[in-house]
Amino acid sequence: MNFSLSAPRRETFLVSAIIAILVVIGMIVPLPFFTSYALGLLLIAYLVLAAGALIDGL
Image 1 (cartoon, rainbow, N blue to C red):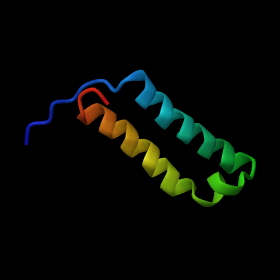
Image 2: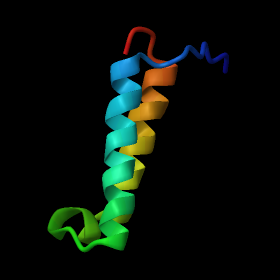
Image 3: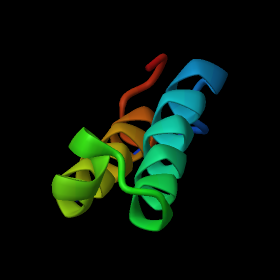
Image 4: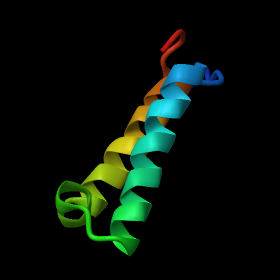
């Protein structure tokens, strides 16, 4: 398999970074949604970033 990787757009990176930062803050200060779904939200943040690297223009 030949993957063509590209840098994700700024918006894609910011969305994944904001989700990850909110999860980390949720682990320090109890936030209702982010504390209970921390692992799933980190996985979503990583998948958004990976999709931005794999899909051109995302």
